[in-house]
Amino acid sequence: GIQVEQSPPDLILQEGANSTLRCNFSDSVNNLQWFHQNPWGQLINLFYIPSGTKQNGRLSATTVATERYSLLYISSSQTTDSGVYFCAGGGSQGNLIFGKGTKLSVKP
Amino acid sequence: KAGVTQTPRYLIKTRGQQVTLSCSPISGHRSVSWYQQTPGQGLQFLFEYFSETQRNKGNFPGRFSGRQFSNSRSEMNVSTLELGDSALYLCASSLAAGGASLAYEQYFGPGTRLTVT
Image (cartoon, rainbow over all chains, first blue to last red; front, side, top):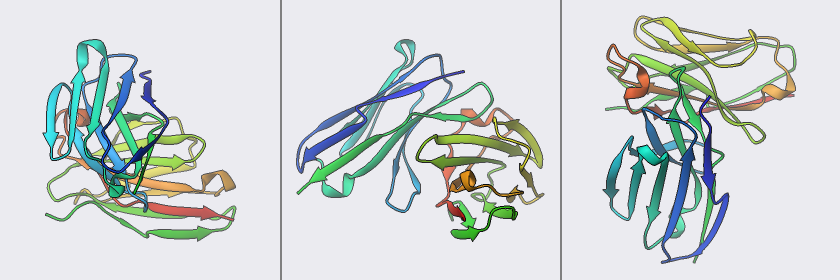
C-alpha cells in the first residue's frame, strides 16, 4: 500500500523563523491533506491539496503530484504553531494514510 | 455549521469489558471513517461507512466493529477490551456524494480517549 513519510520528525524554531515541512508518498494519491493536531488531540484541517499551491495566512502548501511530494511552509512562526503536523494521502481502500508527523516546537 | 462531534470524550474501562463510541458527522456528510491513534502505531484506519454500509475496512481484529444509522451517525464497538486498545479514537466525516470518499476533504472530530486498565 501507499507509504507516507514526513520530515523532519522534530523541529525546534525560534519565534519569527520560517520552516518547511516535507511529505513524500510512495505512490499516486487522489487526496492529500495537511493537519495540525492540537494539544487535546483534535486534527485541525490546514489544507486539502491533491495538487498545486494554496495559501492561508502565514501557512502555504504545495503538492507536486507527479513527483509524489508535498510541502508545508510556515512563515513568521508563533508559539501557537507548536504541535504535531501530519500529512495524509488517500489510499486504495478509501482511507487516509498518515505519516508519522513532524513535531514542531516554537520557542519565544 | 457544527463540526464533527464525538462522545464520550474520555473513557476508562477494564480489560475484558466492551465499549461503544459515538460519532455525529457534519450535517450533510454521509461518509464516516474511524481511526485509532497510539504512540507506537500512529494513526491507523479502522473502517469507513457510507449510507449505512461498511465500505472499507482496515487491518484490525473482529473485536472492532461499527455501524452507521440512517441519519449518518456512526458508532464503533470494541469487545473484550485489551490493554493495547488504549488509544485516541478519531472519527472523520466527508461529503462523499456518491463517489469515493477520498475525493473529498475529511474533517475530524475531537476524539475519544480510551484507557483500558
